[in-house]
Figure 1: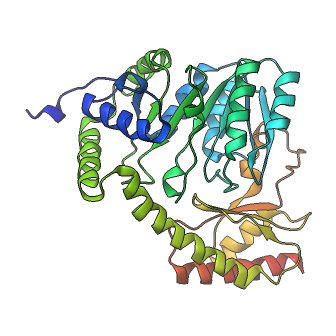
Figure 2 (figure 1 turned 60 degrees about the vertical axis):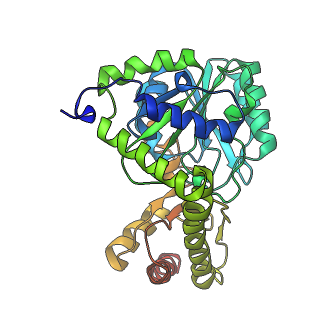
Length: 352
């Protein structure tokens, strides 16, 4: 039998652990080794097991926040969910500090530092260091979910790189947006955290399939031979690819929505999304139904990204119900143009 067909270590294969540690050393400037890395089944598994670790404790998240955290957030945090405003510079650290001061039971802060899903913004360098200091002062752990830094031409230092003493940040990322949709992610953290979370992998899936781990390692090695470094590959290929699509989508938005009164959107530097805000009173769930059924266009309504939406009763009105997340990662430039033209027509129909 070949080596990859046998069972492996729950933490991950040694070669891949070392390779990811080397990549992250270049990114963070910290002294990292295999003991600081945990291989997960996509970053989503990392999110699940970290949220589980804070079951019953308060968790601060962005408003809006990533749709994929809603299930574990509701399961483990229950009613201890504390939203913090996301503005043009990412999570509002002044508001965060106030929320943590008033709610000392908050023990985790979930943040997406690059291309925030869904708002598309990046956390400024000043706020990264501020966020770490707030977390340390309030004795909370930062859960840094970073799947989109590889789509940025000029990514900023990860939050965990500011954590010189270690233990205050658990970093999660993925290769899915960079190489292939192989459902392989990883966690970077103090070795004590890695030791705590490794049994969670063992108890659920034993380990990420070795074939996927070896394939990933082989691809990274080949990329480094071709481009000189993995970071250079991300800059020249991944960031360039998504940068072109981002510009195409922005031009199509300007073309079809630029003349419509009261509609605004962000100008993302990275990530896969535009966050569009329609005039107050617009119900994007109603817009979604019309756009899907009559025009064949889909998007995600803003209320889906409200961390309080699914935990409230039917009378709750989300403050972001007039917003929408538009994803440009898959359609061609022509499909973007045609889709946004139809979406504009649908909006004009419901607003007339």
